[in-house]
Length: 209
Ligand SMILES: C[S@@+](CC[C@H](N)C(=O)[O-])C[C@H]1O[C@@H](n2cnc3c(N)ncnc32)[C@H](O)[C@@H]1O
Image 1 (tube, rainbow, N blue to C red):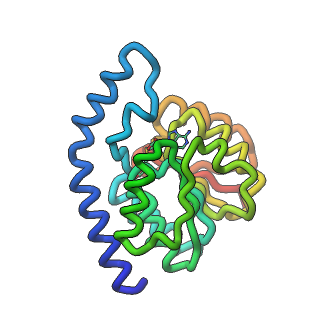
Image 2 (cartoon, rainbow, N blue to C red; image 1 turned 90 degrees about the horizontal axis):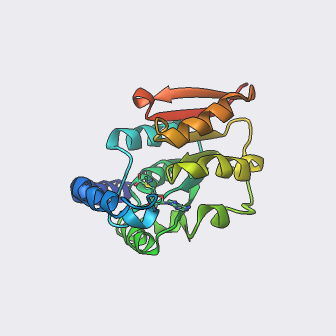
């Protein structure tokens, strides 16, 4: 990766991680809004909810070690995970489609991609992932699932025809209830293999070879 990109991405990530230190307080506000009704993404419009730095660094390795080029991400938030994906595809000469429901988050994510010098690698889609990823053309090498967990199964079904025998599906927050239901369903299919990482926080789904 050119030094120019490496420095810009790392500087942007450092700033974003520093800012995300306030997530805990902002999350309490989000939970408070959801006392009398189910939680909604808008309740967390100020919150990063990002993957950890260790996860991000491992994602970069996953992309470069497996030469993954066509990447789709569900759940952009402010773009932390997308910036790690960008580090990977700078090496493999790939590109990223990422999608986020909350327009204000998308605006900030785009600013972050511009600051990091990688906007040209990222197709950012605003709206419900079920709509924005409908009729997706081309194959997917890596699908990162990191949005609302009840959509993991419908999105997996929607995008299944874009998978190939080496596609990797990265499931974040795999230990949450809805993710577990999704993984139980996929795990029943003998075509797929599940590998747990980060103490069960992440599961990688691959095709049995
Ligand atoms: C856990 S956060 C993503 C964090 C991000 N991947 C990172 O590591 O920086 C989940 C995001 O998914 C978004 N989201 C929830 N439901 C969605 C939907 N139906 N379509 C698109 N995005 C959605 C939320 O607004 C939230 O920003």
